[in-house]
Amino acid sequence: MKIAVAGTGYVGLVAGVCFAEKGHNVICVDVDEKKVEIMKKGISPIYEEGLQELMQKNCKEGRIDFTTDYKSAYKNAEVIFIGVGTPEMPDGSVNLEYIEKVSRQIAENIENDCLVVVKSTVPVGTNDNVEQIINSCLVHNVKVEVASNPEFLSQGQAVKDTLEAKRIVIGTESKNAEEILRKIYEPFNLPIVSVSRRSSEMIKYASNDFLALKISYMNDIANICELVGANIDDVENGMSYDPRIGSNFLHAGIGYGGSCFPKDTKALKYLAKQNGYRLRTVEAAIDVNKEQKIKLFKKAKERMITFKDLKIAILGLTFKAGTDDLREAPSLDNIAELLNAGANKIYAYDPVGMNNCKKIYPTEINYVSSPEETLKEANICFIFTEWNEIKKIKPIVFKELMKTPIVYDGRNVYDLDEMKENGIEYYSIGRN
Ligand code: UDX
Image (cartoon, rainbow, N blue to C red; front, side, top):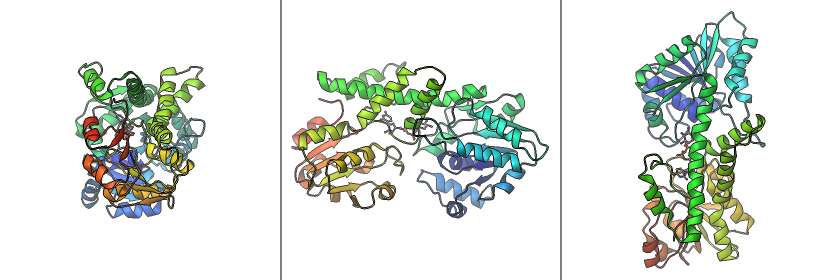
C-alpha cells in the first residue's frame, strides 16, 4: 500500500520504517529539513536498537523515503498516518495544534480517496475532530475516512514492540476503514483488536495509566516497606507469582519518567475533570510519582546538610536504560534540586544521554566519559538509571574510588549485604 506518515518522532518514524519492512511503500514527512536530510542518508535521528539498520535496508530497497514536501507526499497516498507530537499543556491538557495543522494540510492536498489514521496519543474524541477538520477543509472532491490506531511501543525496544506487538488496536467507524487497516497489518501477522474510534483512543490511555498506576502503587508499598522493616524486592517477588498480578512493571524505584506516562496520566485526569469526573486512582499515581522522584534527594539532603563543594557523582541521566531520552527523567528533578541546594561540583556519566543533558545543563554539570571518572574522589553518588554499564560496577569500586562512599540508588541495583560488606553507606528504595 502507498502510505504517508506525518511526523518522524518515535511514533511516526518507527511505524514508517516497520511498514516499509513489511513491504509497504512509505513516504515519511517532517517539517525539519535537517532531520530529513539525515534520514535520507539512512541515519536515524533517535537512538533505537535496530532502527537505523532497518532504515538503511528499506531506503536501499526503495520502500521508504523522507521529505519535507507534504503536498506531494499526501497528494496520492492511500493511507496517511498521523504521528506528530501531542505535547502537554501547562494545565495537563493535550496540545493538539500539530494534529490540527496536519489535518488541514492533508485536506488541502489529497487528490484521491484516503484513510487518515491517527497514531499519536490523543484524547477521546480527537478522531471525530480530525474528521471534521478534514471534511471542512477539503479542496478536491474526495472521500476521507478517519481511524484510530494507537501505538504501544516502549522506547529502547520500539522496533521489536512494533514488529512483534502484543496486539494491534484499530478504532474505526466503517467496515471499509477496518478492512484497509487489517490489510496494512496483514503481513505483521499479529492479533488485531477492532473497536470503535473512541474506545481505541481510550485503550491507549487506560493501558498507559494502568502501568503508571502499577509503578506508583509499588513505589507507595516500597515506602511503607521502609517504615515497617520489610523488603520491597522480596515483596515484589512474592507478589509476582500470582498471574492476576503478573511479574512485569512491579519494580519500585525513582518513579516513572519518559514521554508517555507523565503526560498521559495528566491528560486522562484532565479529560475526566472536563467530563465532571474525578479519576482518583490516576490522580494518586501522579501524586505518588511526583514525590518519589525526589525522595532520594530529600534523604541525601537530610544526611549531608549541604551539597556545596561536595563532589557529586551521577550515574545515569536518561529516564530509563536503552534510550537517550531525558524527557521527564527523574535525574533532571534531582539535578534541579541539587543545584538549588547549592551543589557546585556535579559530575555525570551516561552512556548515551549526555548530549541531550548538555542541552539543558551546558555548564552546570561536568560530563565525563566513564563511571570511574565520575566516582573518583566523590563525596556522594546518585544512581538514576539502570544501564548495564552502571549495574556492572562492582561495590568495591565505590569504596576504592570515592572519597566518602555514600551511595543513593534509585534503581535498587545492589545487594544490601554486599554493599555493607564493602563498607558503603548505601540507601535504596523500600529495602531494609
Ligand atoms: C511506555 C509504555 O511502556 C508504552 O507501552 C507506551 O506506548 C509508551 O510509554 P516508555 O515510556 O518507553 O513506554 O517506557 P517504559 O519502559 O514503559 O518505562 C516508563 C517508566 O517507568 C520509566 O521511567 C521506567 O524506569 C519506569 N518503570 C518501569 C519503573 O519504575 N518500574 C517498572 O517496573 C517499569
